[in-house]
Length: 74
Image (cartoon, rainbow, N blue to C red; front, side, top):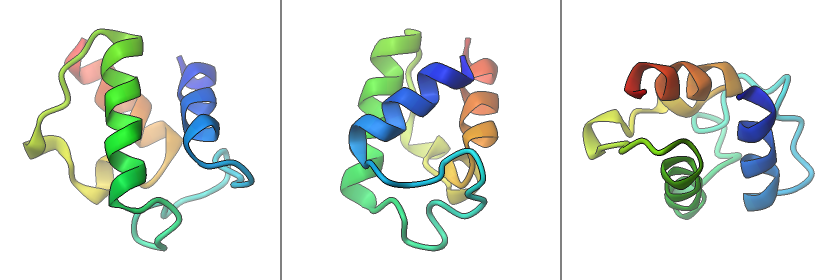
């Protein structure tokens, strides 16, 4: 699952060390348009429905947080 999340993130924005980044949202690495793309791809790839309530920085600041969010929705 982590590899698929990394592939989605790299497809949205290349050149970021996603495996070691700890503040993708808080540091402005991913902007709101990037998040919309990421959420759409995650919904399609993992057959989940990420709602507006879940669009919190803590759910998207790290790859592990994104994986945890997906697991909680499956």
